[in-house]
Image (cartoon, rainbow, N blue to C red; front, top):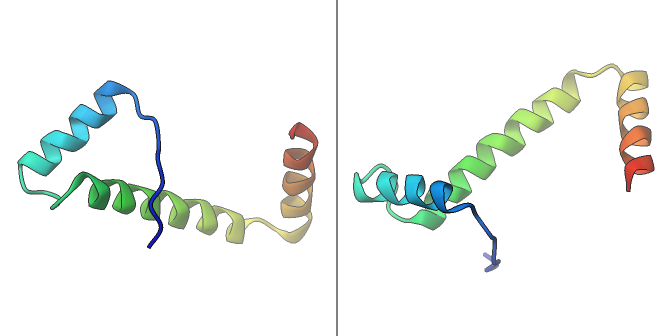
Length: 66
């Protein structure tokens, strides 16, 4: 596992700490990993549901923004 540094709004960190204090997650890192995993699964499911042409158009439009 790699260590990274992220900047979070104070209210996000406070909410994560509350979940940690309640024992919902054993650590702030675990809460963030779980949230990121759910986000990525949702995004990947969305991309998989696109038809090939729509997917190509979406990728092309995102490349133009960068």
